[in-house]
Amino acid sequence: MVNAALKKLKTLGIKEILEILPHRYPFLLIDKILDVDTEKGTVVAQKNVTMNEPFFTGHWPERPIMPGVLILEAIAQAGAVLACLRAKEDKTAVLLFVKNGKFRHPVVPGDVLIIEGEQPHFSSKGGRLIGKARVGDKIAAQVEIGYAFIDHDAV
Image (tube, rainbow, N blue to C red; front, side, top):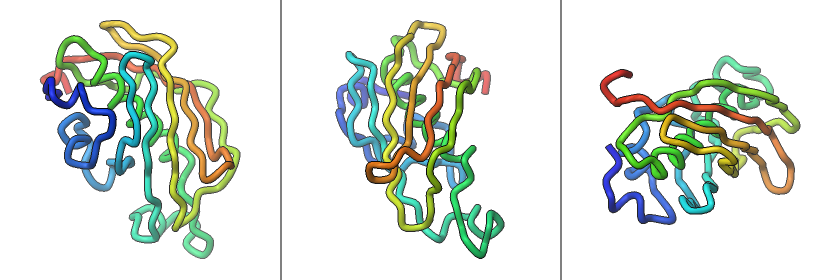
């Protein structure tokens, strides 16, 4: 449940993210929100990628790389935080579609993934997020994500 105090914050730590998203370990894939602007519809989030991630034990163990679909999920989670903070009613944002996903650079243990997103469309029913994830100046992935709002009890 997103309270009014959370909607006023520009940065959010893990405790605040846990108040907004229903995800928990090992599926919570963002560590902090570095900047959120509900007026402009933008978000910047961070994921610290460590060797302790459970997916590294089976995803190319000799040369661990973060699975691309999990990078897209991290982008979607950052967008869901933004959407829930912008929503007039207390709703949950659920994934509706993934479009034009592209993987451009591998993400490995020790990387800091910076996720940037903007919402070109937003309404009381849902919206879209154009997002990208980068490591340093290299884009790791980019995607367009659609989401819909549902009641918390419907999940």
